[in-house]
Image 1 (cartoon, rainbow, N blue to C red):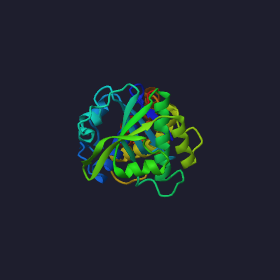
Image 2 (image 1 turned 45 degrees about the vertical axis):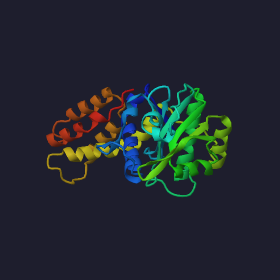
Image 3 (image 1 turned 90 degrees about the vertical axis):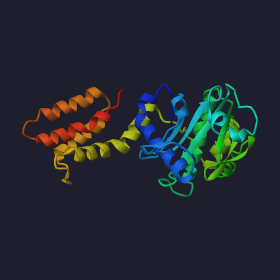
Image 4 (image 1 turned 60 degrees about the horizontal axis):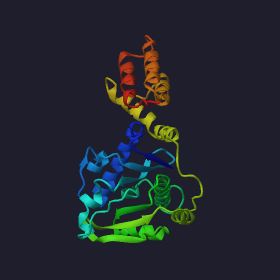
Length: 291
């Protein structure tokens, strides 16, 4: 399931982007050994501050399992400013209708083998479809993507072979990198759909994506925060009443709804200890979803 995050809606998807950045750190820093900047477990570079678009794949439990970044080539972009060795003396690509696709990654630890909807193959193809359809709807005609030879083979195997390449293959970390060209045509999208057996609409609405992500994360995060904030920090199971408030915090989508739950906690004298109340009220601040 795919959600597109860009400069217009990214304020709603901070937690999703954080999980995406952590996935990128594991893939590009740990697995591929690229020279990337990783801080607090997240891989973020200067191009993430240029309002790119992110095409993000979520699994059925609301976890980020795939992602790719799309950036205009009319300004700074990786092929021109970081991977320019690939160009081998050729001028940088500059076109309003050709965007750069980078940081394509899939969570190979969470996903399995085979070709069902919980597999690496399915998530990869779904992300390809989402990327191409997003580009086509946005008036983008072509994509230039910096990939490694393994991803090049994946593209070809998925009936999504590049129609050409730019420059040469150049060393990047543990693996070489090359720049491939893809057209954003309905024919290409259809080929990938046929290969993967994906006929349905792959996109989620913003609200559906937020709800799915919240269901996979919020209850666990609140319960963990409640335990961590407790005065004795022991492993005492939450009481039925505490679990009720955890559920109410999980369901809250605005700061007003969160405040209403806090007011209810405060309105129960003698039912919860001051330490329990304090713990329950520490968790929700970062979890409220502004509508």
